[in-house]
Length: 242
Image 1 (cartoon, rainbow, N blue to C red):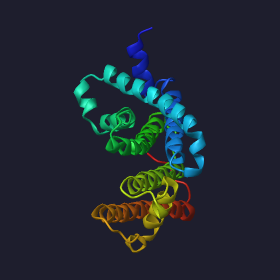
Image 2 (image 1 turned 60 degrees about the horizontal axis):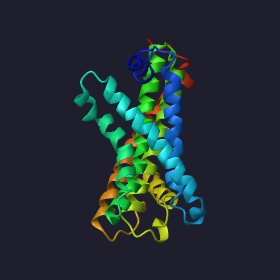
Image 3 (image 1 turned 90 degrees about the vertical axis):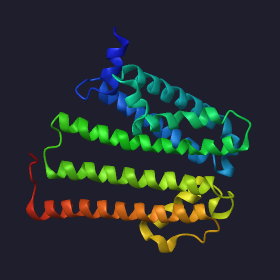
Image 4 (image 1 turned 180 degrees about the vertical axis):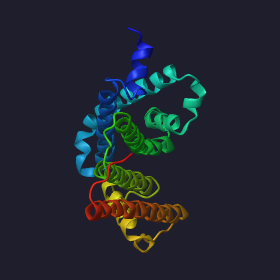
């Protein structure tokens, strides 16, 4: 079997039977990795550090294999390496290897592994393209369901990524003691606006809070658009998409 052709079908060919199982598998290990990273910051779970370490290196192995595979099948390798998604894939694995160093700042960089959640946005985009190719998005209802899923993925991604940034750039005390706590803080800002931002003692805190508020406005606009589509469906009935 031509390994390169097999990888091409599994990673890029929406018409291939290998494509959907591969994307589901990559989504699963991404979620497992993210949950592990979040939980390892909780002080009460320190006794499970060896479990988190096993999960980390196992998932990084798969991410590394995927990254190398995408480079191997790319027609022009530099186009993938320096593309947005190529850089996202690299960020998925680089902080873990950098964390092997003994330098304090490298240990902090390892927390940026949480940016792996950005992979889910790509998988959501791929899944939507897959459904379109196979004519599975036929009605307004199907379209609304996909948009709702994308909204919650985006909300989860923003909450997790910005919550992690709060955790990285603060003293790990009080409201910043763990990623779950900073995620709660971020979620409040996303749904409540700038007024809910915590008193900040650093410029970085202010920048993160303002950025989170702006992202919250974008997500609110997306939510309004989705609600409008649902209301339109209820009032005027199903509409088949051309």
